[in-house]
Image (cartoon, rainbow, N blue to C red; front, side, top):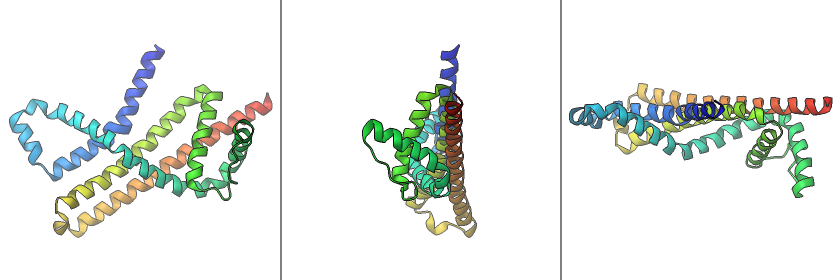
Amino acid sequence: MSERKSRDSWLYDDLLAWLSPGGLLLTALALRFPAGLHALREQAPELTLPTWFAGAYALGIALSPLGRIVYGIAQAIVWPFLRSAWSPAIRFLAGRLQRAEGLILTDPARMGSGEFHDVDRRLREYIEAVDPGSRSIMNRMKVLCSLSCNVAAGCVVFVLVDLLAGNAPTWTATQVAAACVALSGGLIAAAYRERRRQRTQLSIWRRLQIGHEAG
């Protein structure tokens, strides 16, 4: 039963993180460039839906590298606002890393987003090792963050494809405004999900610390 639940969870995560953004991008491209869709419907209409699913999943995976760039931007936006909240966790982790690896972390007040990215990963690994039960909720928050970042990346790809297709001269003010709203909305959503992910991770870490102190 647990193996089936784990498998279903991974399928659901794939649906969120890869198929949904890829499906949105594929649908937008099909509406903007309908010739390929019309040809498929004429030649093999029964393959329309399977082709959509396969193409959506492939595009979702292809969006991942650009989504990681969006994730880095979102993390750089969120990190300064949560610097004070992260300070106790970073000092705790700094003590452990210095004892175990001789690694000295930069003070949180001067830490850049690049170093924080590594600290964030190490703290997540510590939490998963100490409290394996928290892995599912942290993974789900990470998947939701990936979903937002990949959707934002899909908006960028759609605009670039339309630009490379030479459609820029035909853009209307409404289309430009819609593109700006979609791009900014995608980045805002990515930053929001990253903020929620970080706060959830910090809440779990605080709960573990309180449990250790009580014990």
